[in-house]
Image 1 (tube, helix red, strand yellow):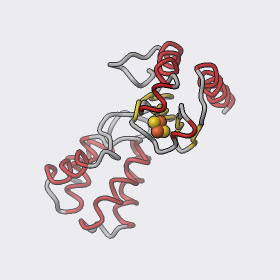
Image 2: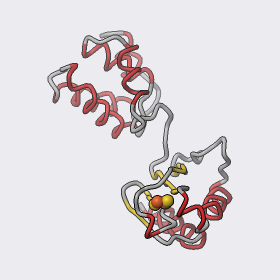
Image 3: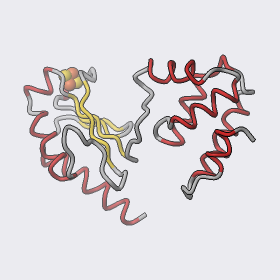
Length: 174
Ligand code: FES
C-alpha cells in the first residue's frame, strides 16, 4: 500500500477507516480517471466536510497526477475548502442589502452564543461553522442566512439564535 494510503488507513481517528473506504469507493466509481478530478474532490469533500492534505495526496497518487496538480485545483475553486468545517455551515450574507438590514448584529449574536471570533469560525465540537459571504442573490429576503442548503430570510438575531437552538436540540436528541 502506498505511504499516503497507509497513513490514512492506520490513523487513530475512529472514522478514518470508514472515510478511507469511502474515498476508495469514490475513486473506483470514477474508474480512477484523472479527468474526473473535480467530481471526485466534490464527493471526497462531502465525506470529510473538507479536503485534508493527506487525502489530496492519496487522490493524486491514485489518479496518476502530482500532488501539486490536485492541490492547485482544490485551492482554485472557492467551493473547496482545506480547513475542517462544522457539521452545520452557517453562511450569513453581508452584501449591501443584508448589511444595511442588520447582518452585523446577527453575526455578533451568533459568535457570542457559539464562542467564536473573527479568527475562529468553527466550534470546538465541530458542530457549527459561521462564515460571511457576499450577496446570495436573494436581497428581497434580506438579511439572509443559509444553514447548509436551507435558506432563511428576514433573519433577526433572535431568529438566528432560535435556529441554532433547534439544531442543537435535534443533535442532543440524535
Ligand atoms: S445582499 Fe444579501 S442576499 Fe443580496
